[in-house]
Length: 161
Image: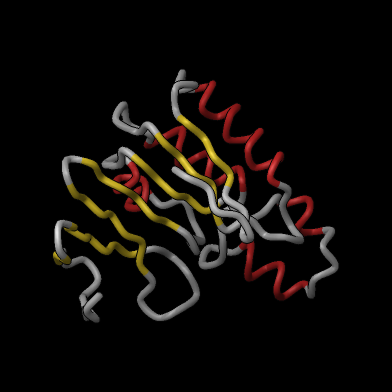
């Protein structure tokens, strides 16, 4: 695969893929999420998102398939024994989405075209897959979208989406 330099906010193509990077709030230089489109299907990839911004949700609304961060449970984060400054960083506006924040994005922006959703970037110490999945299933039920295929991605497993 060729190396491609791109600018945030400017679409580029690689083979059959049209790739649109978009800004996300995280504590690094110019972080991005991606929308990839090919063959009439659009994939959203959003991890390392500190705040469930409308600008991120608008991109999620374009997706048929999505991978979304569901990094931590706030209670488990507070009880993690981590240094308070690290807890503040993770839970802050340029840190990581909690399960509830991921649910908020999906409740507000899941469009009728969304068919597959994978929860990713779960903290090993500050989240539990069944908590993330349970929260998201409840959110999907609230918006009448129990038809969405939901998966929870784990760091050491391969999951087909």
